[in-house]
Picture 1 (cartoon, rainbow, N blue to C red):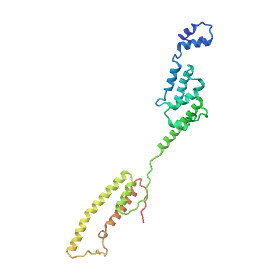
Picture 2 (picture 1 turned 180 degrees about the horizontal axis):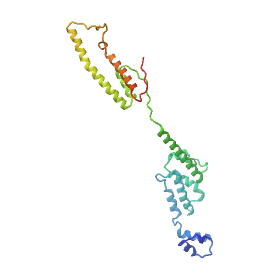
Picture 3 (picture 1 turned 60 degrees about the vertical axis):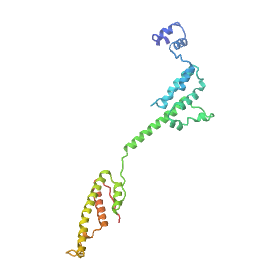
Length: 258
C-alpha cells in the first residue's frame, strides 16, 4: 500500500484526504505539496538558458537537459511530440564541443527537414560512442608519445675545409660533445698562431742573409713541419676531430671522404 511507504510529514499530507482514497489521489496531493510550482513557460526559459558546464561531458549535459525538458513537458511548457526536436536544438546551442557536433552530423536534421530527428536514446548512444572513441584515442596517443625517445640521426661528414667541417660537426653533435670539440679547435688554432710568427721570422732571416732554405735535412729528407701549409693544417685538424669524434662515448660511426 502507498501509505505504508510514506513517512511524516508526507504521510500526514496523504492522510488528509482520507485513508481510503485511490493512489492517484495521494500522488496528486503530494505533488501539490512538494512538486515544482514553477510554470511551464518559466521552466522552458530555464531549459533554453541551460548550457554545458566547464568539464562536463556532452553525455552528462544531454541527460541534464532531458530531465529539465521532462519537467517542461509535464507543466505543459512544450508539447510532448516536440521533445526530440527541442532537445536536439538545445544541444546545438549549449554544447561547446563543435568537433562532436560536426563529426556526428547533428545539424543535418535541422538543415534537412525530411530526415528524422534523433530521439533521446539514439542521440545519447551516438554521443557516448564518440566520447569513448576519443578517450581511447587519447590514451593511445599518450602511450605512444610517452614511449618514444629522441633519436639522434647522424649524417656522413667529410674532412675538408675547416669552416665547412666545423659547421657539420656542430649540427650533428650534442651540446656536451660540441663543447669538447670547440675547445680543442680553439687550442689547435692557438698553437697554429703561435708557430706561424716563428716560422715567418726564420724564413725572413734566411732571405736577409742571402741563404736559401734547405730542402733536405741531415738524413736527406725535409722535415714534414717545414712543408706544412694552411691547407695541410686544416686537413690535420679535420683528421684529428674525426679521431676525437669516433673516440667519444655514444659517438656514431662517421665516414671520411676519398
